[in-house]
Length: 172
Image 1 (cartoon, one colour):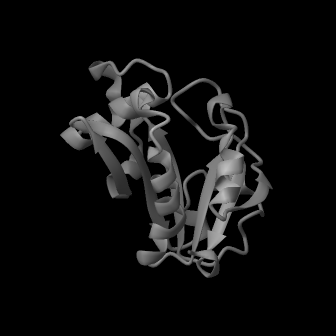
Image 2 (cartoon, helix red, strand yellow):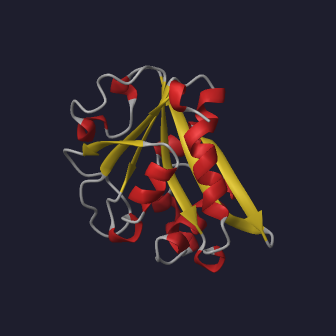
Image 3 (cartoon, rainbow, N blue to C red):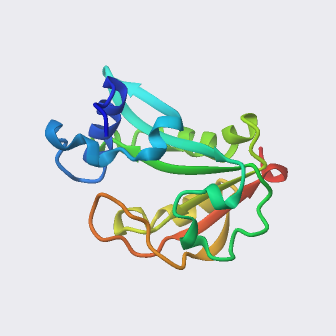
């Protein structure tokens, strides 16, 4: 991987802090993956630093999605293009300030402005985000069921996540 831009360095450090890990500058690349380069990143700044963020990418077909194999047949009927929403994180110093609520709304709606006809997301793969199930449902997501595999995350071993989707007709 090439050297990270200052933005991706800050984003990587946020992800490390949000997931309870060291934001050691020598290991920041482990928090960035190939999808970050082409993703639409949405961030909230507080006190001169990224306090919360999420990303989405748009894919022409289901076969182009990251971790395609974990979805099995659950996503076969999603209309394309499909946005893949992931990595919503909030810095521990800013949790409880309501930052994720605005990002959750954007994640559930913004990809449609970029041409997506459906949005795909996962949640609940690690203990720290199991509460997200109720949040996702409140924001209009449909739980399609459990994944048939695991996502490769740079943190503690993750279990199979739940799969969530929204279609353009459900946008608010």
